[in-house]
Image (cartoon, rainbow, N blue to C red; front, side, top):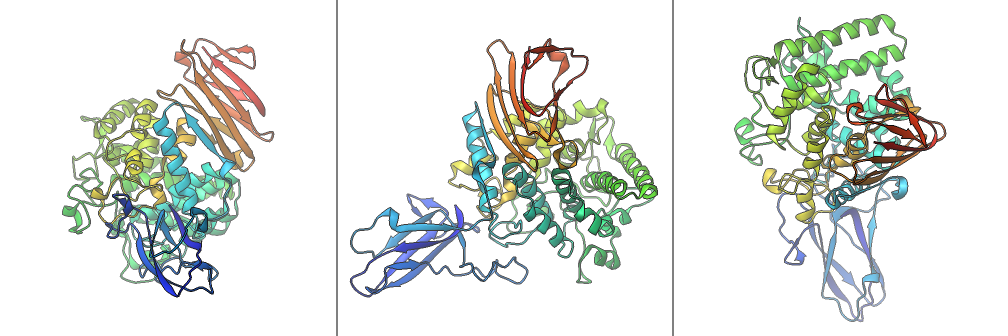
Length: 556
């Protein structure tokens, strides 16, 4: 599937009309002429004549994704539509596949900037699906939400950004999207709280401080700290029209609304395209919302770091105190000691997957409660959307539950990436399956979470210092017996191989660029000996310092 048009060669002996069908889905080995939701299909008539032998398909623009609020493509582009199949009717004479070319429009991309392979064939297919989805959705020059609207949304863009960084060495599109959001916000409360996450990812992966310096004051509004009460916790109900204007909203009627996950259940909104259950695991909405405040806590950590970066030392001290206050308030007011889980908000005893996975993903959970929270999360399965899976998987890896995280990524039920492949898509879907969001599209990058989770958590390769001067490698391979990976960074590529031998000895071969150092983490309690480049090390701590170049590790 690609955002594309079709060019073809055809020699007609008479004036005639060809019928061309293009679409994303097959039914009985033919393009589905009446697909569900926003799965794409068009029927296009092409006049042909003996005087012409080369043709370009004139795709009809879609009314919704060409509105003024949508990202407009350059005038030099033809109309594009995502399709993976083409059929012709009415053709005369010999036709060859080589006569047809899908003209694929995408941003600058180097396919060999990254790779991943492992002993699990299902995970290999999922990686390929997710990596390709990131490439294919770069067509607009900004991170958009798929083909239905072609509008940037903050949460979609953050997930897209992370996966773009781990699949290609390209940072301009993320930066451009970040700047777009400063003037074009969207309504969900948590989406505003993703903007600081995008700023921080840009800073961490590139070391560039330009965006932070330029937008620091405006970004403070995006943390929503002005909506806090005496206990430090925030509520979207405190957002006034004047505050909405600070966020970049221009309509006096604009309001924030907590979203938690999407789509909602029909009972929550009455929305006819929502399913009966929705993707919120029965979340109970209260003015003080646990999911919102977990995001808020992470925003405070980020804005505190940025204050220090800009030498605003007194402000950084105040922000640090507020950060600690909020963490304490979350654990005091939103944690159920008896049940060992986080409830959904002040005034309810209901605990959802989302409240607990966000607390664990953002390291809010005290060490003594990590097990009970992780156990609760594991009891809920994939009770979140493809968007929520980002934080579910981060939470599991943070709790050293790599085995379970791998099970989630390689699952074959209808709430899995495998299901997207099985139903015939070659880009990630907007939802797990059409029955969970009947108006879904088949080209949504926010569904490509494994493209960043595999490098950043399964292999555990992440920047420790801005600009990747130092990286951490904290692998949690689960049941994999072998793997190889290449991860792009602004300083060059990190390449690594892994083998678990029959005697349970583990071998890692890690190549680090010349201008980078690495820290390799392992579970000291399960390792008796460590050998680095033929030299046995004292293992009085769980970190091995890696040098630029080749590092061969043996864990016994």
